[in-house]
Image (cartoon, rainbow, N blue to C red):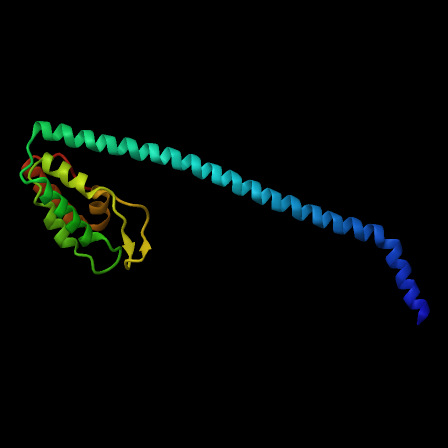
Amino acid sequence: MPDNHSEIQQQLISNLPMILLAGGAIYLTSKVINGAGQTADEIAQALQLKKSDVQVKSEKQAQEAIDRYVNEVQQKQKPTRPDGFWAQLAERIYRDTQYSAVGDAHEDARFCMTYVGNDADFALLYKYYGKRQETWFGVFPDGGPKDLTQAISSNLNKAQKRSINDNYARKGIAIRFV
């Protein structure tokens, strides 16, 4: 028995440099992988910040374009109702389409869209709707915030959108929903 024990000790001692080398290699590899993970995280964060900067700039440009559109249309046409009406109607349309599940009042949203009498009305409704978040069951966000045209296009069915488009065509309103 003692020979067996000393034989194992001797094998261990003779293999000790290989064991230490393997352990060191494993340790070094784990450090490199962790470092690479941290570097990848840092790169991802930098890209997200860059994306955020670009997104903020894009959103600012989009809002400026909407404001110009509203001002230009109102210089050419007068809205048929006061601003407060369009703000309330925007809220009603949002309540009709805010959940990405059964239970939304899409027919009422379609009906609300028929209050628009000219391009100035649509511009104000669009402005007051802004960008709003739809959710699943009032809890889970469904994509990013949507503007009025995105909300109508994604929530109403083909027949409802065709009804709005026909109504707008009769009134000479330029916007159409697909």
